[in-house]
Amino acid sequence: MAKLLIVLGVVLIGAGLLVKAGVPLGRLPGDLVIRRGNTTFYVPIVTSLLASVILSLVALLLRR
Image 1: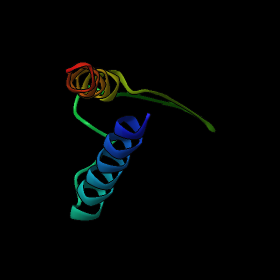
Image 2 (image 1 turned 30 degrees about the horizontal axis):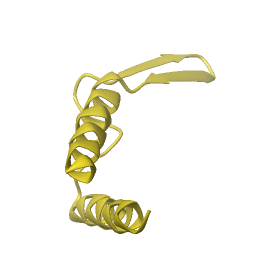
Image 3 (image 1 turned 180 degrees about the horizontal axis):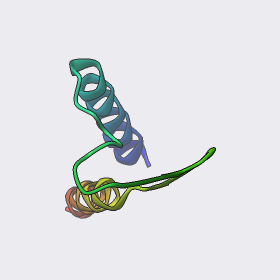
Image 4 (image 1 turned 30 degrees about the vertical axis):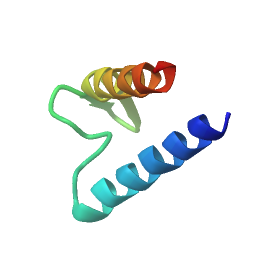
């Protein structure tokens, strides 16, 4: 449990530093934004894939 909390903290700090540096997390190329009138529909396809890869790598590291 301690390893999980440490890794989660490091991942959150890394994400925070990326956002602070100007990396547009959540607005990557490949994410769909549909605007019709007063409605906006957002589908974060590439962001979801990237999050999945990162979480898979973290899980792989925690299993060792």
